[in-house]
Length: 287
Image 1 (cartoon, rainbow, N blue to C red):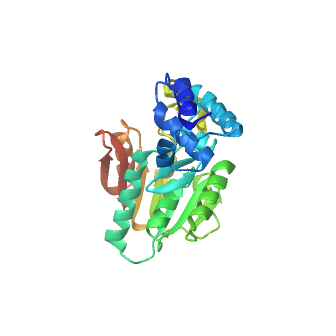
Image 2 (cartoon, helix red, strand yellow; image 1 turned 90 degrees about the vertical axis):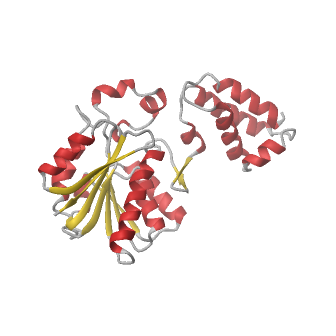
Image 3 (cartoon, rainbow, N blue to C red; image 1 turned 180 degrees about the vertical axis):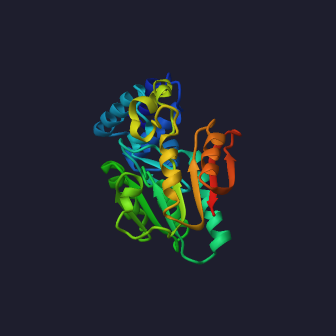
């Protein structure tokens, strides 16, 4: 079978998905299977494809037709210009989360320059936040914590792939993961993209997210704020004076989390919007 014929079959199988780009997604899968780039796919449409590749491609398209995320199928997702390995059991990195990373990198550069800073991330997923900060600021020392084994395995794989030695990952329930490291009062920045979907809204998420991404990385309790209630007060034991606490948040949670931070004594609290003009990141300074 020729490349063009196979692509058409794939597109026809997934063209009715509500959330997706059939041509792009079919092309991405074939790129992976043939180990070629997109230009090759488009310029060698008459080339033949082995039966093994055909079978694997059709299997992938069948999974995608049922809502299985394309990122899990190809096993990777681009974030902050870096290629991250992902698999089931970790949240797929979103472009909106880059707002948090970009702010942290700018904040470090403006406030600390070439000085070493300690950064803690709570809930690492694929490691996208921790490893992006570590990649773009090699003088930062990053500590990442997660409660589950799959994120820790995936993040460590990404750390190795990116060749980073300024990141360490630990297993535990939020701050319990770094108990015994004597890091109380030593973090310049604590960052988190915690689960923030209210429990009652989980069933209304799009199928790709609801059925396949890990619920423990999404469900933030009754009102979506369970993890913020834990992290905000506990963070004060670990931040330096003037340290930054920064979160990704849900689109309608900014004011409530701002109030929670104010009640714990944080100052200079600001909310950053995403490209759609919705609340996406909140940060404040511990005085």
